[in-house]
Image 1 (tube, each protein chain N blue to C red):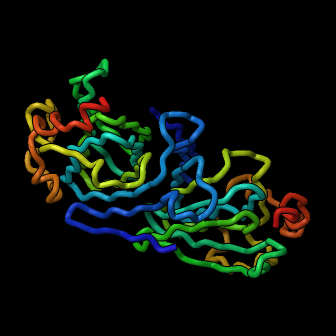
Image 2: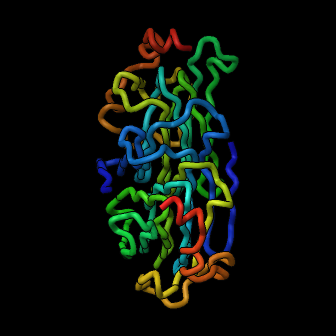
Image 3: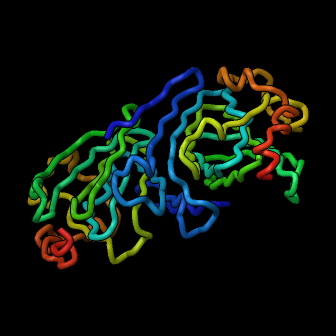
Length: 165
Length: 165
């Protein structure tokens, strides 16, 4: 959803989240993430928690693919560019696979609706052809975990993701 | 409180808030604020809501004065410098007057524990001598409201601030 940025001589003020917007479950923890140029984080998906995300600095190429069998947008993929200069809050539902590519140094803020639980962290290779995501990069910088991630087919077979969807 | 920044090749990851840290009432809305160089925001104080604040970019010279009559630190003033490079989460209790000075362009994130309510926004002149804050500036850029704020003595007479303290 678009966020309203208010400008004056002093700078810019932007509300990034309100409980009363009722976007979904309320967040229980918030994090700030800085990324170097050419970093890709993901592709990840969760069975329990929703992510809320906004850019504080720079740009994000956000890749999404809906893995929820019962969703009207099941199987759809989308690649969006988000900029801190045109602030948005992104809500990433349970069961929607997501990857974050940062073409330039960037900073984003995100929150999650359950306390961190390693057993709710699933992922697959960022460049699995089945994701149908045309990333604007060929050799991004990945974490060890993301580099070692398996194929999408394996992700789709995980019971907790199938059941929730 | 100091925050733990985790570094790797990709950048920096910092948890900035968790409900389970039990720092006080839980936040209900979050905002992102960019400030130009030489901006001063404040001095403000609230009777109802706690503020949580962290720097995303740049530096903050944070001025605090405890106005709570029953507080052990009643009447104490402090000027602190906070940097995004050494991340901290600041908790500003009800009844503690606060001003934010940004020597250089900066970005901070903050949350509040009640939905915005104009009747919980109190303030006084940033340079009131009674605040005992030696700001590192003489002619900061202020909002109209902050420029027109009254003396500290008037603030101290406000019943809702006296009662809560």
